[in-house]
Image (cartoon, rainbow, N blue to C red; front, side, top):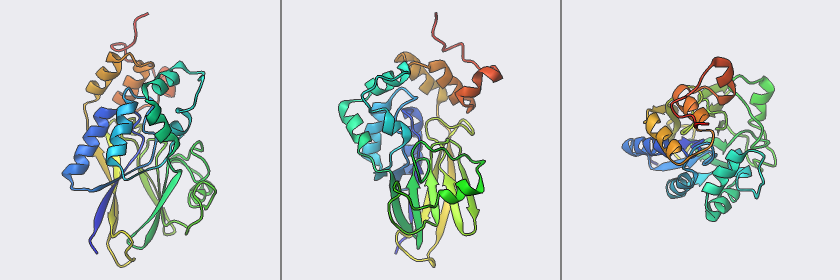
Length: 260
C-alpha cells in the first residue's frame, strides 16, 4: 500500500491570509488530505470565508471551543464575540454546531486520535508545560472520544503552541495554530506520513511545518472591516504574544488602534 501524507491544521480563527498560505504550502508538497482540529472562526476578520474554505478542503473537521460557543444565540457579554458570530451565515453556524468532537484513524498500524483541546472537553486546556496526569489523560477513553482502542498518537490544537512529545511509546502532539500562533509569528501545521491502515512494519513520520505569511496584509483586512479588538489582534500576529500579556509587557499597535 502507498505511503500517504496528511496535513493536520488547527486554529485558523478567521485568518484567511495565513490559511491560504498554509493550503498553498500543502498543495506545493503534494499532500492530498487535510484534517482540521477546530476553531475555524472567531478572533480574526473572515470567519465565514474560513468556514467555506474548510468545508471545501478538509476531509474531517473536529469541533473546537470557539466552534462550540460562538454559533449560540447569545447575548454575549463580549461585544466582539457578537461581531464574530454575526459575520458568520446561518449555514456557517449550523455547520459548526454539527462538527464531531473527535476523530480516530489508523496510520501504519498506529491508532491516531484527533480532538481540539482534551479528551474530556473542548474547554479543558492542556499546555506544553503539563503534568504527568494531564499527559496521561489525553490518551483516556471518555464520553468525548467515544469507545475505541487507546491511541498511540494524540494530536490536538487549542493552545496555539506546536510541539511533539513522546513518553513510553505514546506521542502527544500539538498542531499549533494557522491563524493565531502564540509560539512564533509564522503559521504552523503538522504532516502525518504513513500507510492508512497499514502495519507497524510500514513507514511512519510526524513533522512540523512553519509557513510565513503576510501578517500586515491580514491586519489591514481586520482594520478595513472594522473588526473589534483589532489592536490586540495586530500585536498577537506580529509578536506571537497572547493578548493577556500585552499590557504588562507594554505591547501596543497604535498604528491600527481605533481613534477615540
